[in-house]
Length: 455
Ligand code: HMG
Image 1: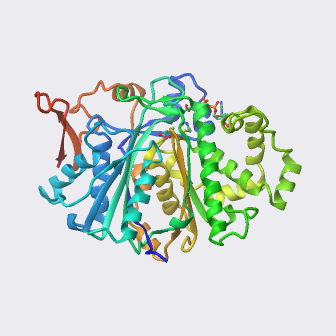
Image 2 (image 1 turned 90 degrees about the vertical axis):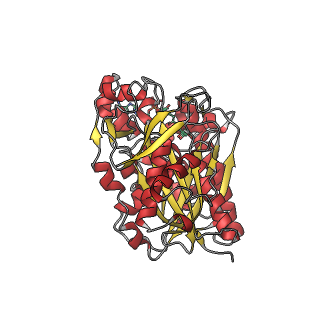
Image 3 (image 1 turned 180 degrees about the horizontal axis):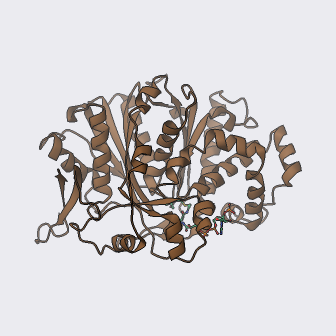
């Protein structure tokens, strides 16, 4: 038996601005219910002119350190996962180190390891597993490591991806004997396929996406990873055979959520696959009819076929689906409906949303994670909620931050989106926060980003 390692605490950062989804829909001549009900998004978090993925990551890390009374010497690694880094060479983690040293003193973090990890939205889950393995190996020189997920999801104006934009960061504190979530490394399953569903060429500020196709890739990779997770559970005797249900072993879960309806698609696919061999499945298909045939279709073609979508629509209306969904998934979406996509941060914000909004006792429950990143890869893994988790949850305040934001009109949002506001023209001028204040313009620092903590 190896060491118990996992997540001790988490701190989320949200931009203070948002766009109302209904207002955006009206402006784009889309029925508002398509965004609010069809996709499940109510508000989109929008970064201000002085913010980028680095400032958001620094803010989340600072809050995490302050609320846990940590000093730089307690930290072994600050590893940051992002797919919207402002620099193609310098890791965002080093910019964050520099910002933190404005608070803790120059050179105070010079002992840390500080890499940046990239794999679209699944990057933070990869970074987390790497760091936890390092702690479990005993190679760490300080008690804590921090993994930060930070991203700004941006698509072209007027595109079908536009309503799924958003932004956020979340910092995860990792250690041995954690107070919140203990990792179960032995079950972790991966599913990786070289694909083109979503990518962002280095010269572009917005992603190129094949929307429906990306949904198929998400469901395909998640199934491969879930199968691997289940096989590992069988190998280790938690399940007696592959015919048993894995979902019954999971108390609650968070999926990567580019838009909340996607978590419903993912959980429905999960259950259809998991329940197929069980007696209850017979009753379900008596009610909704048989699953459509896959013959002649690739996995992705099948998952985005009208026949499969119709079958899934009927399945999600069943009592059996609804009761599992309400007890295991729904609370993760309370915060995510108000944020939009935040790429790497999304699945972890879903975890915090569960913790802050559930009143039942979660101690001892298995917490499932379904993490997906385009390009493409899925990770299915799990944690056990620790007995003292409530003490940690008391100091979480994502829900308060969601309520304290300012709504901006569509023309202001478009100015921010298109970079028409200068760094000093923020809608809410920075106060007690890190801000991007200037760009280098000499031959030796052309384009370098200068950050400052503004009091
Ligand atoms: P779309 O194709 O316009 O939407 O955009 P749709 O036609 O699929 O409709 C969505 C839902 O709205 C459906 O619900 C419709 O029925 C419903 P369902 O039937 O499936 O339950 N609907 C309505 N509901 C109420 N009132 C109405 C109405 N009209 C329709 N009037 C799409 C959706 C996701 C394609 C688009 O937003 C997009 O391209 N988004 C960006 C890509 C994306 O988010 N992909 C998700 C999977 S890939 C991923 O998660 C990775 C990612 O995060 C990146 C990374 O890894 O870095 C993106």
